[in-house]
Length: 316
Ligand code: NDP
Image (cartoon, rainbow, N blue to C red; front, side):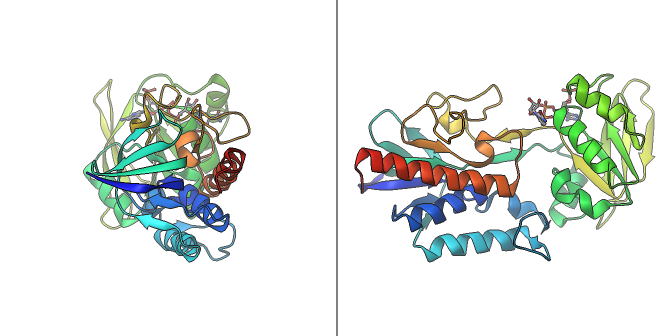
């Protein structure tokens, strides 16, 4: 076990758009931030092919490329980026402790959490294969729906996200097949009504996905009605999965207030958590918007909140 004796002014956990933006702001404010990259450096955008909705990229940008640019900008201002995964935290004292890969311990006056969230997937072999190929499987209609305009797509899920994404897709796609595994939806009544009122959404009740068809890109899906056991193929070119997200916040359990699904709570109009000097940004504390640009925005907010916190404590 190694201990780093210096107490950092600011330590950032996670390296998606929220973390890098927090790093850029914190570094430019001379907080000499240390960033612990986490399990998937770059975050969810590393799984995204084309990002067309992030301002400043008029031609769109490939997700990993965009994250390299975020990283380069954070490094330009001397962010100390360390690879590793935070395995334990201790927020009991006036300064905060973080253990990386169960061995290195870091101590910091302020912590910015930007550990993000992970989309849930069905776990089908071809779903994951085509997702990794960038072949038409997505967990974000707002990010990727535009690529399927005029086409037929399928979407799995029956919660508010699924209902919202189905109506979003229906605006640009020829038809949306919504696959609901039960005979009712979990989504709020108003969101369900929007689905029912949209002519080009067909709800397939009691329907589960067996396979995603296609070699390099999605060509269709194989589904089964779990009541009648009847199997069928639906021809689609896009397959959207909207069965929920899981915030990456398990290590903060017991320290930070979170909702039932693990999203970190923060004080209204700020990034302050229930622990002084610990701030949350990005998807780890946002189950509603979940966009790269909103994550970056809250990363900026967290760095500004941390800077003010340090100033109020007289830490320069
Ligand atoms: P939810 O957990 O609410 O819903 C997940 C949905 O996916 C459920 O309908 C579930 O089915 C279905 N599902 C889960 N696993 C599978 C599977 N293996 N196969 C098929 N279907 C599956 O997640 P959401 O992302 O929709 O919402 C998360 C939270 O965010 C909720 O509290 C929601 O209200 C909120 N939210 C609010 C919005 C708003 O207010 N505008 C917008 C988006 C989200 P089943 O019902 O059968 O369990």
